[in-house]
Image 1 (tube, rainbow, N blue to C red):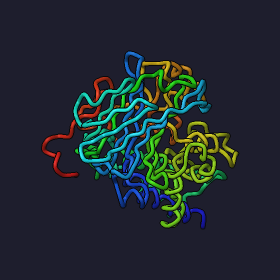
Image 2 (spheres, helix red, strand yellow):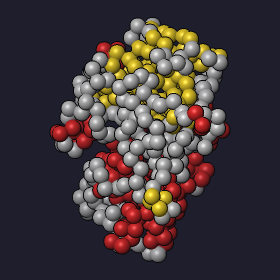
Image 3 (cartoon, rainbow, N blue to C red):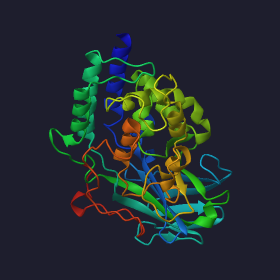
Image 4 (cartoon, rainbow, N blue to C red):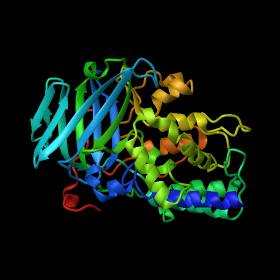
Length: 398
């Protein structure tokens, strides 16, 4: 009974910290205090001609700080999870209207807030306000979690790996609530949302020194420490600190944001707890991607280890980009149909539904929040990729 109440608190934490915010938006006290340091999302994919890596970092504050470095880290290697070289693309904003970005000794400086951006020898960059391409039915997600929370409080039992055994009726209700908004057709909570965006297109030979398997992550770095980081969507916001009191949860998220992929192992036990909850949403425990046998207490260890690293993986040998988690699915789940997909994440991937479906059902589809595209049209081929904000919404954040 104590464990059931405890899991009810976890779901309450998910309601307050995970879906109530977007992919990685406003996830810790530090970035809430200065949203100019807050990375909303990271996107990375190869160009259609196979010559460049496209990168996008969105900043929740709709402006850049002159006291922060905005850094793309591109780790390269010959196989998933094993990288041997790193390329850093560092952008600074020393004054209003001035962007300075550097890759090695290749540097650009000037006004980057124009559609063609600034061009260096090996890359070009855009920096300015754009429409946020992230889309998510936040209210439907909250309603789904409320159903799960109520079932736990009513006595739903947990198995030895802490996966809740929801009834078929409860699971049906969870999945139904998830793809509605207030009982009606799903609505994108972030419609019209605007962000500051740093967009980079860089020659592949610059970022593939170690090999053509790329692990990409982004960070904002202040004078004394790393403030925020982002890789895949949702992990930091949805799976960390959900079982702890607010002050402990906040400290954990701050620690996660200040860490690097090399520090990933210490977050595995916490992520396992969140994964156990997601696995039960469909009423079947043990069908999550990479889940171990039904009798294993460490059922979620492999998936937790994969997510804790939190780099966005790109197969730079491919110029066909269609699927979030393609690199991981080919390398860890033996799904060779994705071996020739670049993976990564374009602005048009239905990332939320794919991510949650893998965590709930071990499939690419199954959890559907009813929102499958943004309200604006974004491009994965035409620089600077993200749509300009709608004119009617350009002056104020929704």
